[in-house]
Image (cartoon, rainbow, N blue to C red; front, top):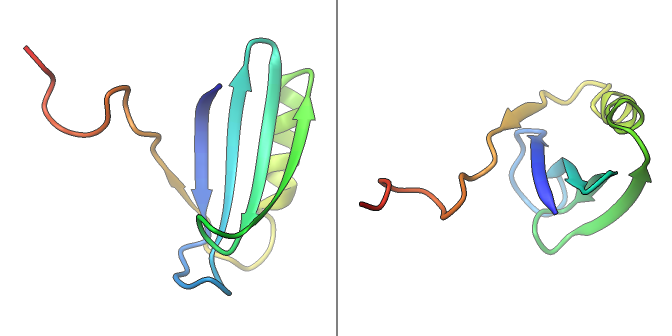
Length: 83
């Protein structure tokens, strides 16, 4: 499964943090809505098309939170390229 995008509401702490992830696996699109950070509770949505998944993402990002898009980590993690 490849992570395409990640949004964070900019808040720290188990009670305040929210994340939304957009992922693809073959021809299936997945959206994860997570509350409470890495150990939090997630809801998962699965779609046949990117358009359907992106529509859900837009709905999840509505509201007063200051959502920020975070870049996915490049393959191999952070740091200089290996030679």
